[in-house]
Length: 267
Image: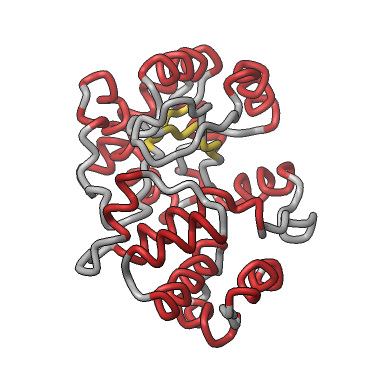
């Protein structure tokens, strides 16, 4: 991927070195992984190093790299006092990772059946992260893309058959219509529902207001249940949320969530 990026950037006098520019941005030394976001953070730093912070960056993105830059993001990138500058610039770059991304091979991304087998051995909850099609982005920072909505029920059936236990979703990402449809399928096929909210930029609040909607109160119970699951499974894998023993004791999912949430709240 670095080679691909440099192929794009070298004509403009920008070069990224993996060892010197990317690795120091990570916690690889403590066992962390390096993703395309680390690469793009390094690219962001190189662009700032060459052009500074201001209109020159916007012009480079639009005129040379042919990225679409909204008026809102242009305002951010033209503000030299912007404390989130690198993240705003990275956000533009990651809007089209297909320019440089290299798909994982079978060694780097094993067959899902092997991951399910590993999860079962370790008492882990196997969860699928729902993305959902994006038309007009709820958060205003995602381009229109098709994901799994056209074949959602077939996918949910396959997840159940394959051995997944849970589905995660993000109230702040999707429309209420998308989430209601997904939640109905989760109930229909017996999936544990978990909040999949994540933080990608300092501009995001750690308080997710969308999740405070009473309609998503189940996600708060799920969070407590996850804490309870971790505590119980650490003591004995046979006590994990997804063990055969637990499923025999609590065959109804809502009863199981209530039990593990009580453990979590008293942890």
